[in-house]
Amino acid sequence: MPKRQFTNSNRPDRIAAKVQRIVAEILRDDYSDDAIISGVSLVGADAHGGAQFVKLFYYSRMDDVAVVQKRLDEITRTVRYELAARMNQKYVPEIRFEYDDTLERAARIDQLLDNLETK
Image (cartoon, rainbow, N blue to C red; front, side, top):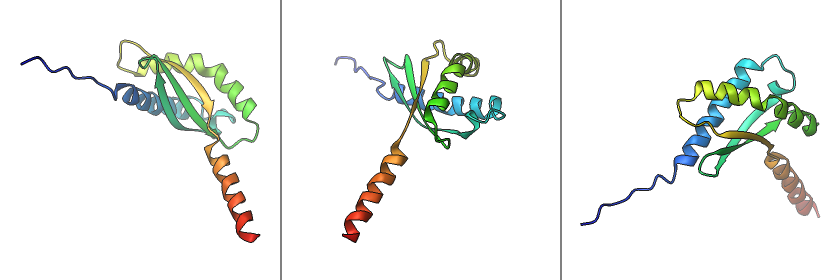
């Protein structure tokens, strides 16, 4: 009987979730004084390239997303350094922050549906 090979297909998802949790803690602990970063909430994570890259999706209470994205880009290197210190892994994935506009799109859809009901 041939040996059965198991694939660990959910490993990237587990790594992405772990990175999201740790980065959220880093932002909360180290950047609570920063007015821009304190309004950021991580809402999801997606791993790519065999978990070498993790895209972190965020939502911000600030209206100017470009300012928030610029600030997150500025601190990405420092956050990744702290992530490496807190993760118990041989390799630490590259991270990138990306704005998630799901809530805004949902609000627009609700508004369109409300407009249809009134006509």
